[in-house]
Image 1 (spheres, rainbow, N blue to C red):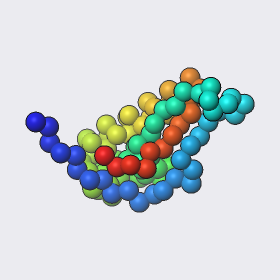
Image 2: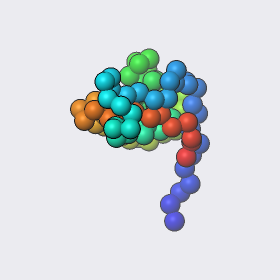
Image 3: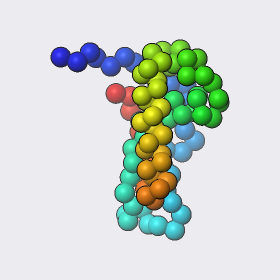
Image 4: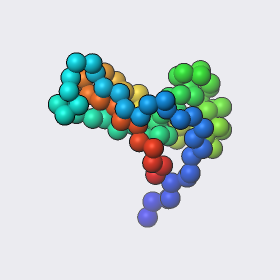
Amino acid sequence: MPRPCKRRRIRGNPQSNYFKPAGILIRELKETELEISEFEAIRLVDFQEISQEEAAKQMQISQPTLSRTLASARKKIADSIINGKAIKISKDLN
């Protein structure tokens, strides 16, 4: 039986929860869903340029967990940019 997920502290809220490529109708797009914890990891490490150790402390998770979350978020964002997908930021915490 897997361990239950630890609750993550999320302090930043996205200004928008949906991004799409210009010139393509929403109904014609595939979506990638970015979890709010992935958004927070990107915000802290890539946008605010905080170290992974400090970001993990702020989110109240371990640094290896933050690293996995960050890698997942970056992969989803890259996939969306390269393949022209929309990005939907989920407000739900697991």
